[in-house]
Length: 540
Image (cartoon, rainbow, N blue to C red; front, side):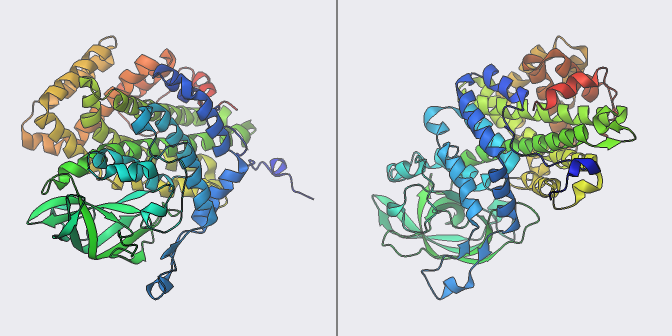
């Protein structure tokens, strides 16, 4: 006989719900940002992502992470890395929706962002290879040999086979930037490139060196940075050579990571690895920066997704768990905590979706300012806030949140990686200053927009003026306060977006709690009508 958990005041796990339909704010974002036509796709995907079967696949992919097969060193027929079947189910679902490439052909970046956001609430690790594949296309599309890759890259067929490109239906592309001596300082890379021949009127190269962090090592190719005649250059390194032999990319071992466990990350040795140049020789940073803007945006989306799912879990738990004769969600102080979390989540969603909308409208000055200045600031802030707020959501569950039977430990383990990957917090904040310094016309457009949007609210007008005053400091003073600049900038963008798009009571609650109240402890601001905010949070 099955035990009734509800009789013990134990909350039954959330499953078989629609991740999209339960999120009214996301539906509003699609309507407001010109993507109403994608609502049916998101409804279908939301149903899949909330189904018991997909939720179990997410558990399986993390409980049984990829394994390194030592036998491949002596048997070329053995794949060096093996994955649980659930990993392939998760990736196939992303490919079938075209999340890995479609938006570059359709310019439907808001649709793509929404699907990415929905998937990230169920399983985050499988987003990594899709992010890198998607981000590689702007860097590769101008190469003379891109037409050979395009049918594979734009295919919606997920193909997990390990074979040369011509035999593949769909392909994935990864990145190999990080070396142990440099980390974020890729200019310190020591991997060397030497000319080796020619392919279709393009020079070919051999790469030799070591990569400390090679994410998604079984991708069909990687973009790799290497030194060429003393200058950093970017290269396309396929897993299989043109003659059908394995390329000289030798996986040494897999990283034992704290989170993101479903996704394989490896340490590799490049030994005479055949490569094609991407971009101009010596312009490796410029070539790779075309990827970085998109991967950073996906970090924001991924963190917003983790934050949203943690809030959904917290609200669901609080709605069913009773303490001192009341449901948790009826307890005044818990209402304050949950309201704060709901607002944090919605602000992160609007910010990330509007950044995706800016990619669709990338030729406008404001969109370019969002892409160049707001994106690194958003990556700094949202990824940092996700760690704190997911931990707070775990605390709503109490001791139940700290055990592995529930979803909270995996959400908390996943949260820090987006803050580290593609540039840590300090790197992002310094990049914000660099963008403001090197492209002052974009800074003027952004600050002008914020001044206009903030003009109807005294708290926001004062915050814009404070930011403008801070930006007048000298370079040294600005570097010391770079985190403060990024924080003030993001909060202003979030607040003005909420004023523009969200219901007035949501926007006002966000502004009052973030701009009139000095503390950052979740739940320390008293909301006038908490129930109104909580009613919007999750609709089942």
